[in-house]
Length: 407
Image 1 (cartoon, rainbow, N blue to C red):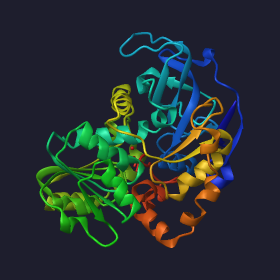
Image 2 (image 1 turned 90 degrees about the horizontal axis):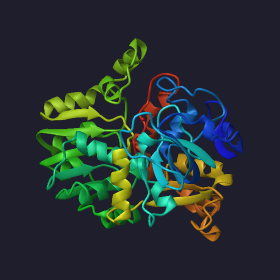
Image 3 (image 1 turned 45 degrees about the vertical axis):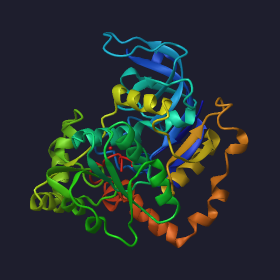
């Protein structure tokens, strides 16, 4: 089968390519797994971190070539029932969406093996592209809100509202968590208007304004851009800042069932974001880091909300599988407004071939514009921040920052 793979850790342009690899078969399934025919997959900043080796301290690749991608949507073609049914069962013909996890990442391929425990059935009227775009970013936002104990009527602040996580976080805050006020940051113009259209009540121009001078008495702050220390002052005493940017904490890893050893604990201690804890203490608020825990229940919340038109995926660009390396370049550029989605040839009705554009040509103007570059650096800091870069071979990194920015 065709798949987008990387053959070693390194620069994406050096190690990524689309090539033929053995197709997974029904005999390869473990109990509680299914084989799907992939229709669409979405990229996230964590994919770039993974390719460059930023996750190898926590989760080294078992072998190369390794298939790129975590977010996926497709049709079930084989199942191996769980030994003990403790959740939704799947059958051949089901249409599903998932944020893949564990030892079987790899969504950008014609076929993939997916665990029951991270998948949900896709509503029939939800498109493949939208379904594939929800998992990582959407679950990150849901889990951040839960960690922050967000409740109906609250005032919440979400930095980087036009990013992959931010676009879904704004909608989920309003439609699912039913908060009273959503404030966010974005560059002026198109991105600010997008945030407003998604439901943001207050959009702060980060280029000319400081959010900490504009906001006060908020109930929760969600840091997707590496600015958690500045957020502490806008909260009511006792409230929480949750970040998906920067260095994970030992507690965040333990929260998803990992058992970091002495060496990893040492690295995390050395790179601890001390300024965040100091700011939290100064303002009598609580700071914590979120490491994503993919699961079927949160995936169901997302597909059901999207199926009901309460939320929608914001898609930046679409590619065919054979153009996978172009999709990686677009993701790595940091200029995305929403998700980068890759479709297999089997997705004949979505999108139409005429709708899949050569982003290398379409985005030339934006990608050579200096203002766009500056904007990108601010809005996607959590996904590509300096500590993420330093992580390559030195320390474990978080998934997701947007989007995040949080396995």
